[in-house]
Image (cartoon, rainbow over all chains, first blue to last red; front, side, top):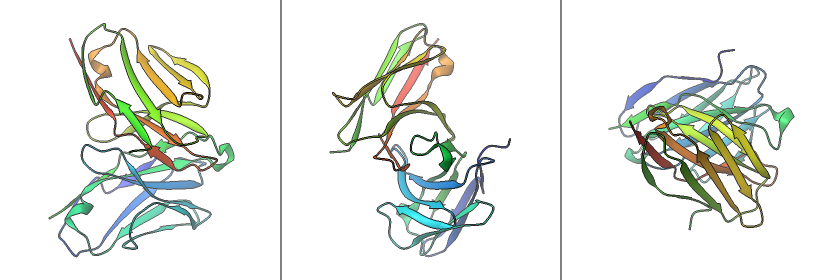
Length: 115
Length: 109
């Protein structure tokens, strides 16, 4: 079992550009959450996808959007990048069958730097 | 005020010492999670608990629901325990996690 995988590992973009980050959940997991972790801070919830729909959303602007595919993998898209979007982006997968106490499995993260 | 508060923010210990990290929360929860984050970013789930106490090796996690407080203890600490330890809560059936800012632990040999 490969666990949760994310790509790319690192990414450098310039202000105003758009970026797409990818996540493949742990085998058998159908729910994917995305988190943003700024340097020295705890992760902040962006949104969660289940059955290809956004089920819950945190306090992030519409520039942040996502998608979930039939194989449960997910993408996070950020448009019109700002310097403040520089962060580690974490994906976590859950087996919804164990909800609401499901253990979350985290990927290694994508470090985004906006110049 | 953050919904999840951790203390201390930074902790330095000598190998072999007993470590305690505290977490207080101000919202209703369905479960509390302790996670470990190493340099480079990867996060590993250590414990998920909704009551009482759990033990895994040298790690012990306790929670007091009435006081809205949890502690993570590390016995016989080792330099490989050096990491950021994060407390997070999931609320009312939602699987969204609300995180504390983390406690950076350094264990010196």
